[in-house]
Length: 234
Image (cartoon, rainbow, N blue to C red):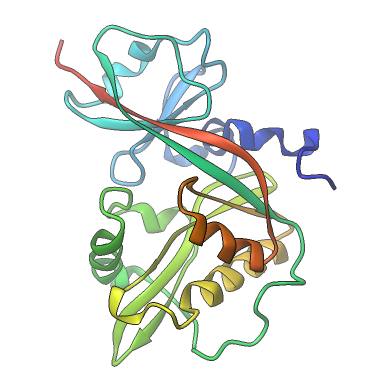
């Protein structure tokens, strides 16, 4: 199936489709615009960005809050400011062929008792994207050394037929050991076993990450923009 096939159209507007399907229980908003419940993800989606009014979401947002919008940007609205624009590469994986099949480290499921360590690790490496209840969105796995969590990866945006691999981080003292490749392979195989397609995003300037994912069999689909919006006081 070509990665530019119409079968992948959901991935052009992944937040909206996630909140309308698998993650519907995490959705707050209206029939046209919604957001993830605070504490899970600071991110919103809408069915038709060109026609929606961002302020229809106001009652579910705190003043000064930062929210990401993925894909097409909604029309300007009073009280909303673009604070950052991140162009990200979206990749998908259709086959297990290039995924790591045998691990040199034990891959452990991460549970509720692991949340504080997960937050500590990811906020050390990628601060601001992972929150206390983010682990509720999917399955997360990690590698431990000396009983300390040193690498992790899991699922973020999930919708019918697709699941995003995210929170791929390794402690700076443990890089270069293929921990991330093993974890991404493990999560991708788990997603495929559930008859869904794994996909992921990374900042498009991060060529090193792109090469790693290519080695695992991920293919580039498109550049998709993450817009960080600040909601100002009225």
